[in-house]
Image (tube, rainbow over all chains, first blue to last red; front, top):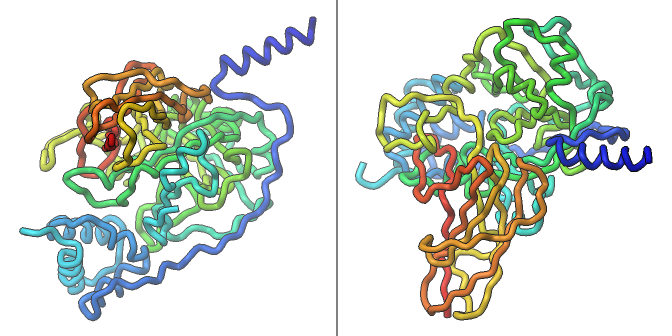
Length: 112
Length: 351
C-alpha cells in the first residue's frame, strides 16, 4: 500500500512539476583544461589590409568579418565607430578611414 | 561544427544534427562567446560562485556545496537571439548564422531560487545580475553581464546548471556553471557563471540597455530605416519549426507517399500543434507529435505527404504553441536580425 502510494506520488510529481527533483548523488565534476585556437589568419589584400590587421585582430579573428554580407560604407563606418566607442578598440584616428575603406571595398555593396 | 568565428568562438550546429535526436549532443551544441578572454583552465576545487548585493548573507559557494543542494532537471532549448540572421533581408551585420544557433539539452543543476533564498533577498531588490568568468580584451570595454527581474529569477524554473545531457558542461558551453532561463533567448544563459548580484535598481549595463534590445512591436518587426521605435531588452522566445529530413532541391516521385519529419518548439510555451503544408501554405494537415520532453524542449513531429502533380512544390511547417501563438507567414525585420521565426519553406520537385 505504502509502496503504491509512493509510486503514485512519484508519477504525479513527475507529471505535474516542470522540474524533476532527484534524490540520488550528483556526478562529481572534474577540472577542465582546453586549448583554444588562436585564429591567426590575416585579412587578405596586402598593404591595404595593414590598418585592419594591425588594429582589429587583437580582439577577434578575421573570419567572421570576411563572412559578413555586403554592407554600405556608412554601415561599415558605424561598425568601426561602435568598436571604438563601445568596445574600446584602441584604434588611432588616422587608421579609421583606411579600415572603413578596406571593409567597404572588400565587403561593400554595389551602388554606394 | 560550422566555424563562424575562431576567436572569440562562434560555432554553429550543422543542421543534420537536429534530424538525429530530440536532444543536441554536447560536442555538437552551438557555441557563442562575446569576449576573447576566456579561461581555458578551471579547477573545480578553487571555483567559487559568489552571491552579493541586496542580500542578507553574501555567499561564496564551492561547486561541492552547489552540487549538494536539491537537484533539478529540465529539458530546454537554448537559442541565440540572432539565430537564422543569415536569412534576414535586407541583410544585416552580425554572425551570419544559418538555423543552427540553437540546441536542446537536458539541463541538471539547482534552482536559482534556492541559492537566492539561501542568501536572503532583501526588500527592495528589483533585478538579479549574472556575470561569468569571460572578460573583454581591452580595459574599459563592457564586461558581459545580463539581468532578470527579481520575480523571474525566483520563479523556481530558472536554474544554475552544472550538467547538460548527463555530462558536466563542456568548457565552451560554460563549464562549470551556466544559467538556464527556460523559454528565453540564450543571451541570458550566462556561461561560466561565477557572480550573482542582487540589484536595488534596474540594470543599466550596456548588454541590457543597448545591446540585445528589440523593437517593442509584434514580432519585433520594423521597416528598414524606421526611427523613433521604443526598444526593450530581448526576452521570451517564439514558436519555430523545421523540416529536418528534406533539403531544398530534393526530388520525389509524384504520387507516392513521402515522410517529412522535424522538430518544433513553442518558445516560452509548449508545442500545441505542428501543421504541415505540401502546397505552399494553401492547405495544412496536422503532423503527429513525438514524445513530450517538457514544454521548453524541442518536440519531434512527422507526417506523410504526397505530391500528386509533377513539378515544383513548396513544403511548409508551422508550429502553434499552447498559448495559441503561431509562426507568422511573413518574415520580421529589425536592425540586429533578432527573433526570426517565419514559417520555413523547403522547395522540392516531384518527378
